[in-house]
Length: 153
Image (spheres, rainbow, N blue to C red):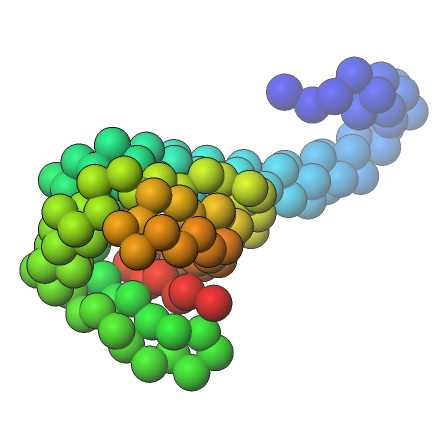
């Protein structure tokens, strides 16, 4: 549905026989609105996936944590793009060990930025067995309804 001011403008143009200009205007702007809605859907999916994996990480629920990642997920270092974990099975081994060795592990979300199909989380990680606390930044790339790539800074 067009905003009220567009409806009024449309009515005036129709009254004076300039309907084709109004239709053209509405068509152009409806494409912009539809593109924006598509980006919003992707951003919403990214937030949903990032939050679900963060909640599962903090609960140390390995299967729930892995459920948001694609089968061929890659975890990389930034900016080198060096792959540190390749695929869901390697993630299962890596995070299964992490959860087992660090039962009090917890990541607090400090900030989240969402842009199209990328989510950037700034986290404060505590509860490691070695007693070290750290800030972490993760960039998640969403493809379809799964996290396909992760970069850690």
